[in-house]
Image 1 (cartoon, one colour):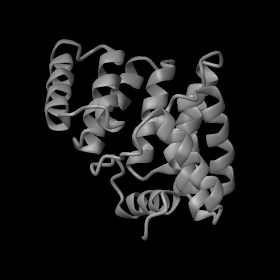
Image 2 (cartoon, helix red, strand yellow):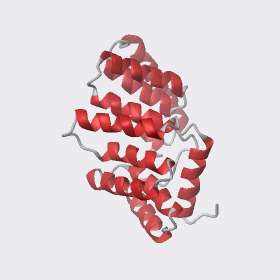
Image 3 (cartoon, one colour):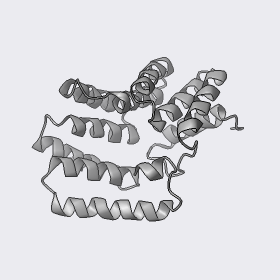
Length: 200
């Protein structure tokens, strides 16, 4: 999933098909394993499978193990893709409570993304800055922060974030974004286009 998301594969369609095949195979053999349910749902949701069905798999995993911090994190991530930012924040907070010693970069990035889609740009930016400090090699944080700064009118800062992003990963963003609500996709992409200096 990461190689497709971050533009590291020369054959994205082949990588995509292989990831879907492996996730489905994992579900066949680990249908009662919360870790398998959560990780397969994450991959399949990112690659375009029905988001409600994938949320259902994560809910099932959390029914099997309500203390599974990673499960709550993935549940939050899928909820932000589904356009449910308030639930995202609740589930991410649960994940943080259950695993307070884990690195928080990706978790704060997801919370920042939820704030971004709620148009709470100041709050989003503060979360995303902390996410980058904790996990400086995680491209999604940079992309969302650049879009956030652009929508705040802070274009110089947005372009500086794009420059930092380009040092660690391609600016490339898959046309198959995981966001299911068209208005979320447009908010994200229009911000990135502004940050990259493109006409919107």
